[in-house]
Length: 111
Image (cartoon, rainbow, N blue to C red; front, top):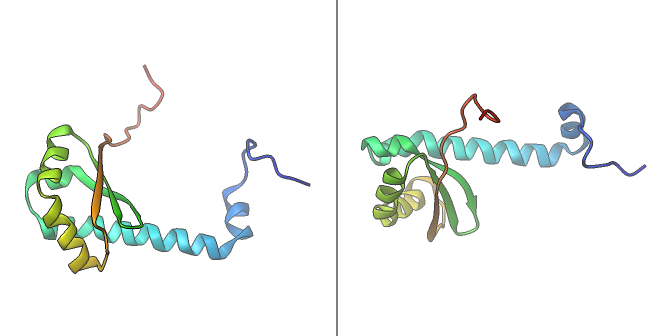
């Protein structure tokens, strides 16, 4: 039987079907969490609390900022951030893709 991807499925069932992939996802999430926790070691300016590394895609670090001013500051410090990612986390990122993405709040879907 072919599963319909539009139908909701039990998360436990999905995770148990492919444990190797699940381990990779968890490892990746832990690595991103470690990077974001250590960002304050790199720079202790207030705007750093408004940015997060959302993903690492090949040679690109995807950075989300909760405000445009924080995004501007991150872009200004891009070279230093890339050097720090290479030194501290052994990442070979050569560019940053940066976007304003406000944090998710509890009022999703409300008008």
